[in-house]
Length: 235
Image (tube, rainbow, N blue to C red):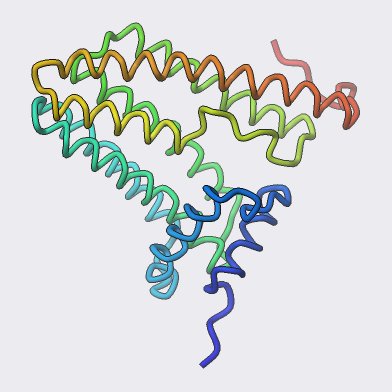
């Protein structure tokens, strides 16, 4: 029996590429591996025709569960680390199901982006409840929001392709958060220190990631022409 349209891995890669400015995920071994895992996990949801928006909201609930687990402290941080990773997998499923079932919508794109940012913020809350300083978590969150805002504005200014994969994309945020929560759970006596190191990692990588993105955006928009006359200038 032939495979249903949109459910094969090659079909998924092609559709994913079309929705991301023609970027070929097979050009990166990491991207290929991750999307292959997401495709395999999303296929049952696609067959059952689960609405992508439902999966998006489920990802937010899972991210919130990471904060609940982290608030228990001590060995509970091990569970929090696992839940953070699980939330990343669920986060990838909504887009995959939408692509595989031809149900991609502009509303779904906006909802997914908003939920991603809330989930990222919840990761910082998880580090804070374990012992990271509030100022570091707030600053790290601001840098993360600035990076994503700059990317969104660049798209509005005419940059249609994926500008650059920086060192500080969402998968890296997931890995860093999970890694330091894992350390906090393994070394209970120094759990607060591990959480603090995690917030510092967010800060350092956030600065580098934002700088990387801005350099590429400036170069790309300069070479593609300036649409400034047609764009509203906001204060």
